[in-house]
Amino acid sequence: MQDIAIRDIKPLVQIPDYSIFLFSAIIIALVLVVITLIIFLFKYLKNRRDNLRKSYLKALKNIDFSNSKKSAYEITKYAKLLAKDERSMQIYEDLIQKLEVYKYRKDVAQIDDEVKKYYRLFIEVVNG
Image (cartoon, rainbow, N blue to C red; front, top):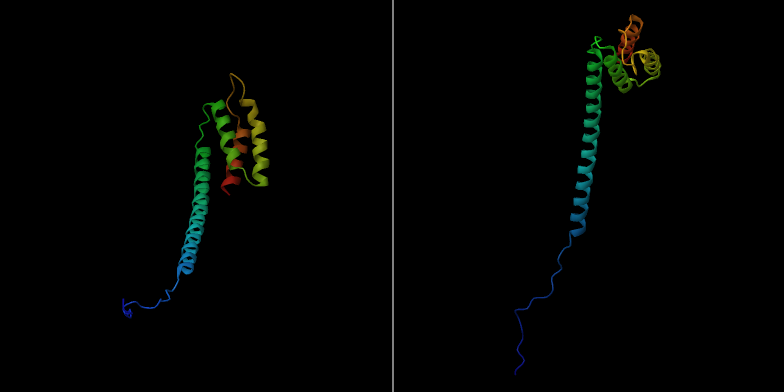
């Protein structure tokens, strides 16, 4: 065979490699999405907590005193969920101590005016 020159084969070409930049961009985008989701989650939970607090306060304001035992338990339940600062905790403890008379018994009397005053004071402090 004769030596034939091969003219259609081209030399190697340098191909630019952008994979590290692409990978970095994807990682940065994912981190930004995660940070955004975390921020929205915190805002949602804070808003939800405020809405729950409003619903607890509304339920506490709408307690019917015709059934003393039931209302004593409801006041205890919602007041515990609403008492956060030092003053409201002190009033809560006093109120619970006064409500003990109306719990854990078969027959109870109507809730007296002193307990209702503490109840209204607690609502004012929490509603503040």
